[in-house]
Image 1 (cartoon, rainbow, N blue to C red):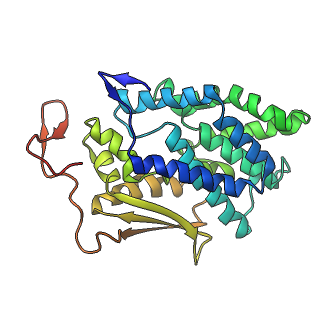
Image 2 (cartoon, rainbow, N blue to C red):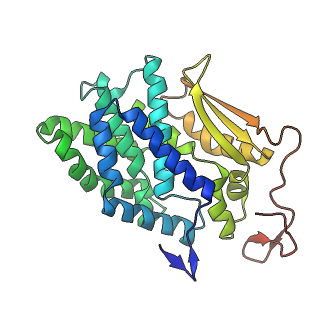
Length: 300
């Protein structure tokens, strides 16, 4: 566990529980895809991958005051990506790995799974340019973990590496993803916006629209849609959460090939059907940043 002035990077219990649930979801889905299932367990059990997640989180959370970018985030968005893949498949949407004849549906799942698990490891070097850093750091990892599955077909191995690295490079939509697999990685990444993830940055003293709006997201549900294959429902306890939906989630979605397949619905959380939950009562600007007023006992 990395420390700064005896302050540990800690996650809310509910957010940690989400990761455990996410792993069960991922395993249930990839049980039908043996190559993807093998790569999931292989990456999850790699201590060097775990170390890169932890260091990336240290830089993002402790040094920069961002929300979680470590192993829990990676596991939560992996489950989201697998759910999106399933809904797209059931709706008959084509994947580029299959359309290009690089591989089959199992291979498409493997590409998305590996891409989403490794998309943020570049933060261990720096947040600025982290997409390119993630690509550079992911390549030897992918070589190591793809080789036991695809090593007897070097042409296929190289093609799937290319698809995976493309998805990692485009996960923040700058540049925008061109493949459906890349789109799934980008959109799944944006679904991890619940208050457990934002609590770390807030508790470390980051008081801005990003941290406050993140605390207003109670849940994110990915389900089959009516007019489109996928509907993503975001439950808000405070209307500030619309910033996350609009500026983070929708901003990414509209740049991807998934834009015509997904509907986003923001709703009041069941516990707050009439009035917003108060997130903060008073903040003070101390000449360098906003911080919670010492007299404010409502936050947290």
